[in-house]
Image 1 (cartoon, rainbow, N blue to C red):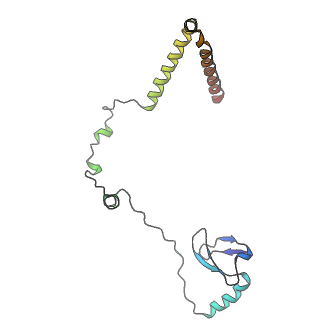
Image 2 (image 1 turned 120 degrees about the vertical axis):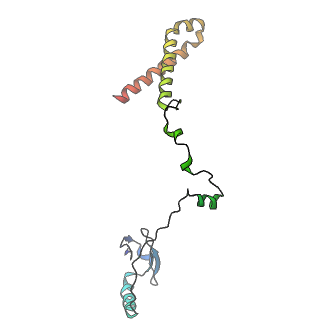
Image 3 (image 1 turned 30 degrees about the vertical axis):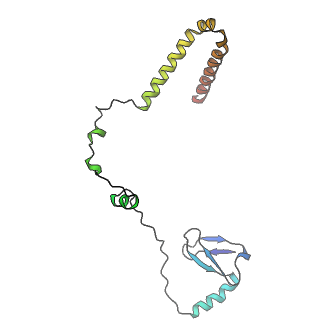
Length: 163
């Protein structure tokens, strides 16, 4: 059975046996309005019966939206959580945020660059002293080989990824 929402005119497919002769309360999944749906055979009888009643003008359905509260007002924070704000945001010293001369920290990319330079230097020194390390510590030879094999795999991966 195909039914229509009275408010938004959206169509829904409902199994025939879901709507009994006495009707069934249904709700629109789109706008949320509710109405009693009768089988299509009984719709003529019900419309005739309703037309005999006084015709009352129906107001169009207006979907009510909830007023959203501002969760950051001082009154709301005081009422809900018992928090008080001593200083308004206007009194914060703006020089702390706007003055870039006082900034003496490095950014994210500066740290990435420093880490990259450190790792390249470390692998360069390891490559230069690989033979000396193997002569002094022979059990480390397979591990150094594995390390350079992994570096080669990562290098091939990045070259293939960017090409």
